[in-house]
Every structure is written in C-alpha cells, then in structure tokens.
Length: 178
Image: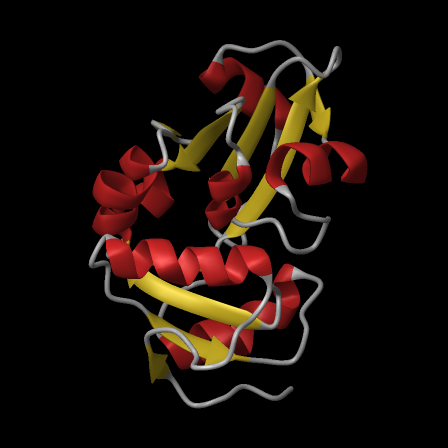
C-alpha cells in the first residue's frame, strides 16, 4: 500500500469538497494537524499501516439511525473495538438502532459507506446528527481520521477536536464507554 511521507498542514492542490472544508476549518481554528496521502482504503484493517505512519490510531466511525429514521448518530470508536448495538442503546438512552443507509449518510453527512468521518459533521448544517465518542478515544492524546476522503488521513490532538473543532461546528459529543 502506498503511504506518503507525513506532511504538516493541507496539500497545495485542491481536493474534494469535504476534505477542502476540513483543512479550511482546521486552519481557521488554528488546529495543527499532520497528514498522509495513501491508496484508497475501504476497511479498518487497511488503516493499520497508516496509523503506524501517523503515530495515531485511525478511529472507526459508524453512522447509525433509529428505526423511524428520525434520530441519527455518528459513533467514534477505537479501531479494534467491537460495536455492540445493545450497549450503545443503553449508554446513549435510545431505542434500537441500525446502520444508516447509504442514502441517509449522503443526505445527512455528505458521505458514503467507507468514508464516514467525524469531519463530516461539517455537512450537518441542520445539526441532526448526535456525535457519540467512546471514552477510550476521548481520553487519548491523538485523534486520527480521514478528512473527507479515504485517500488521505490526518492526525491532531484529541483535546483540540473535542474543545475547539466540535463546539465550533455546534456538535456537543456524548462521551461514553462503549
């Protein structure tokens, strides 16, 4: 798998809409980040080498909804952690959830399966998606994810994500042990 050297900041060339907006917002908020470009990845197993190169684990991001499709959640977990719907519902206080459809992901967050990222809350203009972050992720020094395309990954301090970025985009995360 191709993985570039580690770069500081945004690339010089324009990228996709969400990726460009991610860089713009991080720069506007003075949140330093590092970046690698890589071959397209479709599964968490493909991210192991990228995590090693960045020095931070790429986080698993899952988009969920309730049965009536009236409540949407973006859950962020450690890469190797198994997602358990029963535990999730107990901790978050919701009824049964399932994976959001590709259509719902596109409509609410502007992403497709395989490219979900916490940065997609930039597309949640109506603020209908609740961000849920696993305690283990919230307590880590570094946070790594894709910036809106699965051909690039970034790393930043988790504290900056939680205390600067998410409040700036009007998303208050619920932090629980999943």
